[in-house]
Amino acid sequence: MIKENTYSDATGLELKEREFHQISQLAHERFGLELKPGKEALVAARLGKRLRQRGFRSFDEYYQHVLSDSTGDALIELIDSLTTNHTSFLRERSHFEFLARAVVEEFGDVRKLEIWSAACSSGEEPYSIGMCVSDVFSKPGAKNREVRILATDISTRVLAKARRGVYPAERFQELSEAWRRAYLLKGDGDCRGYYKIKPELARLVEFERLNLIEPFSQHRLFHVIFCRNVMMYFDKATQQDIVQRLSACLEPGGYLFVGHSESLTGVSHDLQYVRPATHRKEKRGGRSRVWS
Image (cartoon, rainbow, N blue to C red):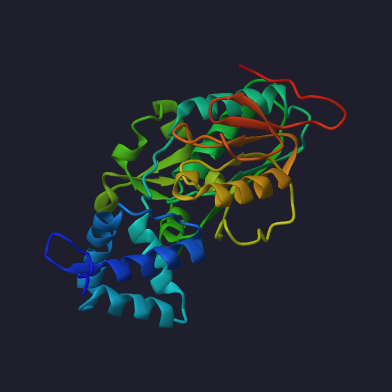
């Protein structure tokens, strides 16, 4: 009889090979998450903490709980545990510099600018987009235009944090003092050491829960889509499906930003390469202008 391989977390809680297969298959079917062989120790460590918090005695018991939970909350906890919600304000700053230039030079005649943050995590990205665009609109001679930012994520937990719009002061180290004064409220008393997004900026952002591997519910086109640092979790087939559907949601001439650690190499799509992590949908009637 062949002994089944097991993997343990720091406290010795064992993840059997069969349990890893069950969990990885569930994560792929429900979220498109790819957990290749070799990720057993990571799964044992990250889910082991969840098992101890919830009082489960084995990974199989936890897996059965996730399957039977009709609310879907346990499934969201699973994906939260297995993925990293690391983000920051103005993360990958070059994208925001590029966006500011595009708003002026490419979308100057657009009366309502539509932007989608497709994996918004705890809100730093869509609020950064709002700050960037608002700063452009505040320049002397700029046209007074409407901007609407859709921010989606699969996790209800991080969306709740994003809607609240309250962050520790150290999260804003990349922001200039002028932007802090323009877009943030400084906490006092029990809120000392925190900042809150100003209501006029928060009103630009609409938060919704969305699983990227499921059909998109929105029926409008976007001038810019940010889908950064999430493709890395998917296999090539899932990446291709998502990129093709994101492309279908872009206005002709619109931009798709992915993370700088990600690549669309090997993924079939109809977007033009502009520069690393930046792609554009071709304009009708001819090729788009491409920047370096």
